[in-house]
Image 1 (spheres, rainbow, N blue to C red):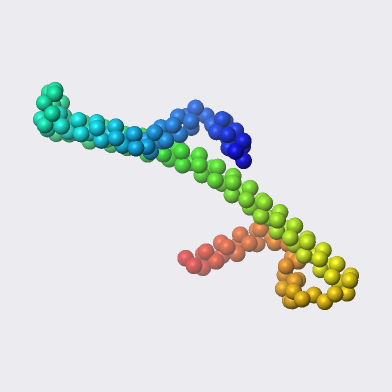
Image 2 (cartoon, rainbow, N blue to C red; image 1 turned 180 degrees about the horizontal axis):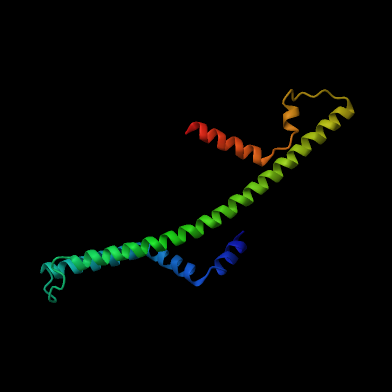
Length: 155
């Protein structure tokens, strides 16, 4: 799984990798500290508390615009990263479903075989009436239809 995850990361396009890098950086405390320092400096200079230079944005309009544009871009980068993660999650969920269906089928076959052996040896079955139900293969479409039906009736 690690090799597969590494292969998937290696096949990511430049834009996806860039979005991941930016998202990772902007989600760090370093980013928070840099912003805290920059905004503090900006406010300090433009209110006159830090007389190191002439105020350039006394009404903070430029600061507000810069923060808004930055928020738009950061949101886009986060959404790109989330979409990529969602695609990976969907693939893993499909794999888990396939494995579960295969396991269900194998267990059903084992129950059928053990039941046949029990009958052949003339032993009494102690499982009870649910044995017939356990010997049936599960149809995934039927299960999904039942889940959707129960969700719709709940809503």
